[in-house]
Length: 314
Ligand code: SF4
Ligand code: SF4
Image (cartoon, rainbow, N blue to C red; front, top):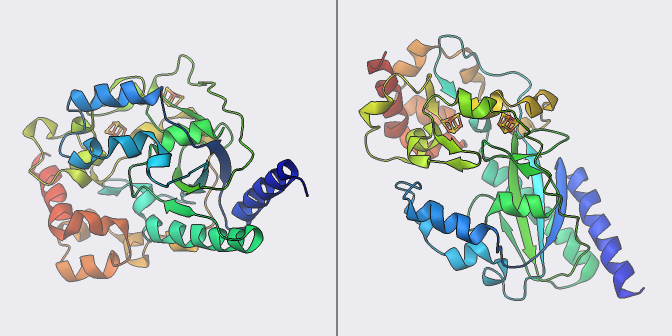
């Protein structure tokens, strides 16, 4: 088999296997320096918009060049994994969790699947170097998704897939295997829409595709370890872990289809959780309900701090 044919067949096999594993999208880009993103990232960091997320300012060489994350890297394979729920938890007069945090921690669910894909790939092509990333290391995931032809970055700074909207986790395999690369279409289909900018309760989208993380509810409720500044009192719209508002109002999410991942279903106890339950949450209940959840990241003290902040700001 000639090398070109081999590359195409292996690339097609990866995409086929990704569908079998439940991924909703898979694209492949050539590993290279992200020259367009480098000045944008530099400007954003210089302005301090990353707030307390000091890790964002580290490892920039690696963040901008996958060959610094894996020696000899040739390809970045990008995957989309749907987390759009069949039904939202009750949001009427209730505290709200971001949809991505309803079920089991996506890091584990997706890493497992990428591990299976790499095992199969190694069986097919022999020894290769490959590293998996799920929101866990310095990788500019959205930039790679665009390069891999999976969509564009909307004004809300999320990756938008023209077929499926934006309720996806992004994950990558960086490998030294040379593959067929997808065509990078940078078509921005936001047009004149500005729903996300107008709907953001804290005005965190300061320009198309530029989020001041220090004002973003996701940052305030998950990343910020100190007290939430008083200027956000009454503005969190009951969000206690993350925020989906700029995705909920995006017309491209009218095309979202429910995921089929059992592990992303909410813990049964959350189904009838009311404001009173949240306000009386005990550490034991927290550990029970969120044992396998990404909400653990906020810890009991962080989650109750968010609840108290909203309650007091009523
Ligand atoms: S996640 Fe919420 S707070 Fe952050 S930019 Fe979107 S709408 Fe604004
Ligand atoms: S809400 Fe409108 S402007 Fe914002 S990302 Fe979606 S299409 Fe683009």
